[in-house]
Each structure stands twice: as C-alpha cells, then as structure tokens.
Length: 433
Image: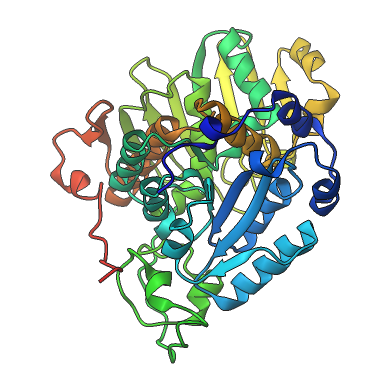
C-alpha cells in the first residue's frame, strides 16, 4: 500500500491544472510529447470495469496532460482488449496493462486513483477495496445498491482518508449550477417544491436461462457476479441485461436518474447533510417532505419524456429538475436549456451556460483530480453521496412496500417499521471464497 497521497510526494503545479481545466480538446498522445507536466507529477489512474459509460468518462480524462491511465481491470476479455486499444491509441504507446482481477490492479503501488465503472452491484465493494489499498476513488453511480452499502462506502472513505467523487456530474454542469444558484439566492422567493425526474420504477427477479459458462479468461463469471447472489451464466447479463434485475440493480431502477436528480434537489434545498423525513408513494410519483417543510416530488417519467409529468418541458432532455419558489420557478435538463420565471432571470443565462450538456464529465473529473492534489473535498464527496443516495433508496423502499415511510435522517433508519428497515441491506455473496 502506498503510504502517501500524490500531493505529499509531488509539487502541485496550480497553473498547469488551471490551464488544463479550460483547454480545448487535444489528443493525449500529442500532449505527451509537448507536456509541461513532468511524468513524476502525473496522477496515475487505474480503471475497474470498462463498458460504454467508462469509455465516455475516459473521453474526458484521456486528454488531460496531468493524468495517465496506466491499467484496466475487467472480467471480460473483449472489454479489456477494447479498453487497451482506446487508451493506447490516445497516448500513442502500448503501455496500458490489463488485468482480469481487480485485486491485481489494486496491488500496484504506482496507481494513485481508480475510476470504478462496473455494473451497480460492484460499485461499493470495488470502491472500498480501492480505499483499503490506498487509492482515491471516482465511482460511477449509483455508488451503492443498498442504504447499507452507501453507509459502508462513506465510512471507508473517512476511515482510510481517501478523496472520493461520486459520478453525479451534473453538480459540475453550468445550467444545473445556475438553477441551484437561483434557488439559494432567493431569486425564486422562498423555495417550497422541487421536482426530480426518474424512470418509472420496476422490479424484475426473473432469471435468464443458463448457458455454457466460458473459460475464466474470457468471462470470469464469479468475479462478474461479485457480491451479488449466484445464478447461472448468461451472456446477456454481461452485455447489459443485468439492468433492472433486483440482484444487480439499485432501488427498483429509481437511482438510474434519481442519483442525479434527487441529488440536485438536495443541493438546491441546502440539504446535503440531511434528507427528506417522509416518503409517500402514489401512482405517478413519490412525495417526499423535508423537516423544513419543502416538498420533493419524485416524478415517474415514461418515454417520451414528459408524458407522465405534464409540467416538464419535453425539449429539456434527460434528467430534468424543477425548483419552485413563491415568486419564481426554474426548470432545466441535460439539453442545457433553462426555462425560468420571472422573465428577468433569462437575462442571466450566458452563452457558456447555453452550451452546457448534462452528460459532460470534464469539469467533474477535474474537480476530483484537483482535490486529490490539495486533499480537499470534492463537490460530490462521500457525505453528499451518502445522504442523496439514501434518500433515493428510502423513496424506492416506500414504492416497493406501497406505503408512507418516515426516516430518522440522523440514524438513517425508518421509524417504527421493521420491514422497511430490513430492506436497508441485503445479504452479499462471499465472492472471494
């Protein structure tokens, strides 16, 4: 285990980091030849799980001159090989090392941080293993598939003094930042209602038919399952068919979007250290209430966006949110467009805000890497993640049980409901046996 974080053994070149944060896209292999960042000052990054989402993240990270992806761990050979091709072509070399088992990657003392982009079932377990190995962690969301796993992840980051960033990148995207700024500044008046969009929740416990299990070097099925319960191999799971499955997914699919949209509402309500205390499910939404009286309405959006929540403006794209005060409203989504009242607020929307896109991870990743150097706290740190994710899970449990639930935000436990409290955690398989 590496005893010191990179900031304690490297000089932080603030001017380089600032320049990188505003630079236009340049192929990373070109930067490597003319870089002002010494190799000894680069953050060495390992990747755990490289599917479509991870490749999107790397699209923002690979051009950064002060970061180098040097290793990839994935249980599927085809994904390992595709990942190496992506990284080696970006850097113009063949240096990226491949591993089937994440533990071999984590044993490397030259790796400073990991990007965890596995399926949901692995996010918390891989992040905790990385923290125990002395690595800082950027984890895709949902960061834990139960309340208990979110708690354990947060506790591990504190215990091992690691820098953590949840992949809820909309906190770093300009149009969402502007909407929250208006909620905080009073330009909407007193905030009283917020809307967070999610997919229509669902539960799927059906098993796909078993298929002949491939050799471990092709697909390591035991490692693919990880902490999830055992079931027979089927390639469709590995190709993305795990989504929506209770054993592999988070909170009846509510966290697919809710990890972003509920998180933004938490931020708008200045509630990063707490959560709603009441969760009441209906046919079309879950109505949540904070101790300060503010309502959070988790709206179920079917396709096309908006047909189950008519107040949403459909052109705003995925993950729309709406903040309502007694003198104004603001609504925005991944398109970058903002619709606000009173009309005077529209004049504050700059061209850079209009160019925002909710899927962009560049600024969010930069925040993570800069906090690694300063040992500061990220915008979506483990405590922010903990409360917003638990709020999502609490809402999902209320929907599953079809009844109103009350939670103690300090104890993070439901009040007088043993059945709901049993759903805060699941038995996980000992995949290391």
